Length: 377
Image (cartoon, rainbow, N blue to C red):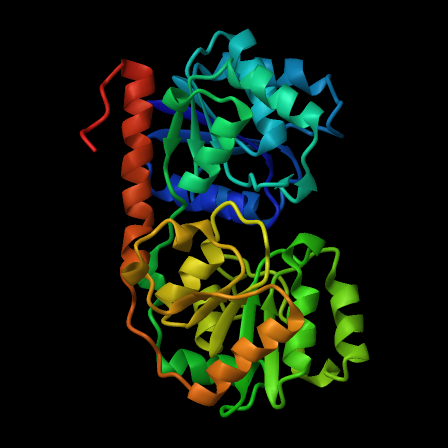
């Protein structure tokens, strides 16, 4: 089977890195087109041996990109087109139909209750999505929560298939050596209470509240992994809160880290933390929280469908918290005072292993291309 993946961009982001990880585990011939921004994840995908083509799209209304995309699909003679993220889903479904490819799967990575990919939802956004969704074969939701939101938009339940995001759970196993070496590299004292967060530094993630909460907890330090437009504002918030020397913005984490560099990878950064906090109030999945659970960290979260959709005993180290700064600070003080030992890897980490997700997606591919019925649930 030959599959073309179309994605809006390939900078460092959750959907982008999830695509790269899935490509490593899918037993098909794959190629990738990125509409914009062939960034670090594009380089990683190419290093894995998968060709990446940059379409050079200049904006949402660059209609000239459509015939270029049609030509790529037609020339590639693909059995299936798989689209990722809103713009790629809209353009990719239309282009596949024009190119004569009728089997189109779309993954909805980032649909919240009030936003899509960090931008507010509008009636026009929904209408365009619904109109192009009908041109495809199936839509993958990364969580049952996203599936329910798609149904609320009017997508037929029979066209929605839940295939959760996945992690390589074995990579995140905790070691004392990783903790010690990473803290030394980041100039974090061995006995410091380190609060961690991972994600795009964007307004919707509400990391500013986490900065203020950490500032109010004596001796706590904050390690934020990610990059984005909020970086300078977060640094200013830390300075205004009197915690500039206790807030470390480690930047985006490439996977794997650049060759020859001393930058730690994500499992090592998680090993350096004592507690993981997700302050985002509107998530589609919450992959970073699952990675933190796999690393044995206690996890405090405001919203995380990946955890909420599980039985309570699947993630015993996770706890939902309120979104305000006092509530965050109170929860952090409780963790600090308890000084919890590293937790064993929970069932949630195994449930969300990427190998399971790849098998589910491959089953959907076979069903879509060959009409093979799905396995019994």
